[in-house]
Length: 190
Image (cartoon, rainbow, N blue to C red; front, side, top):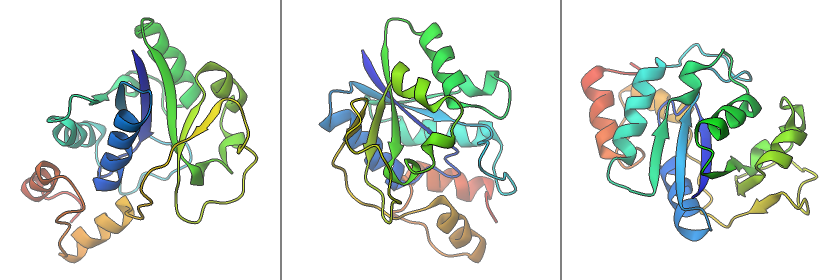
């Protein structure tokens, strides 16, 4: 199977993540998309980061009704912070029967050369890139290991959602209903 890996904190997972994942799984040659919940991103501070198990549970609830989407906790069992190249090697060792592709937003491409072993990532799996608003210029437009995928341009951020929750504002329609219920019941982000 050809599987797209969609890495992120998913703090919380939102409709933008869901639309991108579903687009990748249904409009490309990818047969599934796996959400890789990252315990700690080396480029982000984790002051408002929910526990990894809570974020995993939210993603699990979000994808439960879509056979094209799955979630993995593979990075929970690796040294922190997690580096994408290390996770890619681990996941390929664990699932040698599958071919993997890394899904990323175009806004990350300008910084991609700063990633640990970015050249090996390109060589090892390649990239499926979706458009993002206000993406910085990059040098990957014609790279043979980078495929650009037309997808809706959405500007929903987890930061915005957390601010809404803290202020008591509605997040309805911005997160899957099962995720909103979990956030409300467990009083996340308030």
